[in-house]
Image (cartoon, rainbow, N blue to C red; front, side, top):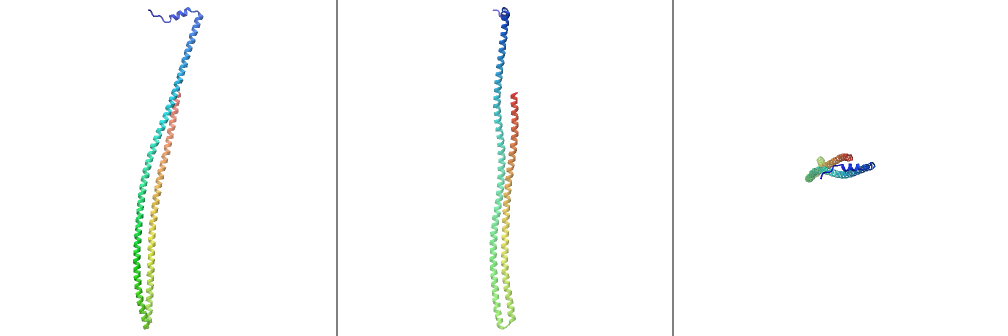
Length: 262
């Protein structure tokens, strides 16, 4: 069977029609083609709208994922930085604490040694005072014996009627009594001076130790304040850096949204 030629049936159909039927047929065919083109354009516009809506939804989801991941990265960075700074601060505080403990132990040992020396000096002082008291008592006893002997001689001289010898003995007795009183006063004065000097020395040592302890405490507080100030400064720098990164992220998001819109 021979193939049919294209357009032959349509040409025969148009040839068999009248002029009015042909015009109506052509108008109907043009209206059908216009309707078909309109439907195709509507379908294409609807498809493009759906495609843009789907792309916008995916863009919002991806933007939310990016923001979540970016915040997680910022939190991890901030956490690691703060952890490192906290470890450094703990190390510094531990070293400062050890140094202060060693200083306190040294000052405590010095205080104990000073207390021991003070006790030893007080014991030696009491022993010396006891020996001096015994020597003074022996000296007074010797003077009393000599005085009694002189009195006996004076009585004998008076009985013999020698006034010059009696005056000489009385003068010697007075000299001996004055020497005894002077020795006693000198002993009391020396004891007071030693006690005053010992008290002054112990007071000076105590004051010096207290000043050293106060200076060590002030130094420790200054070191802690300096460490806290450094930590606050690093936190402030980290916040500024985070703010700049956040601005950059917002700018990038704006550019992404503009690209989606284009």
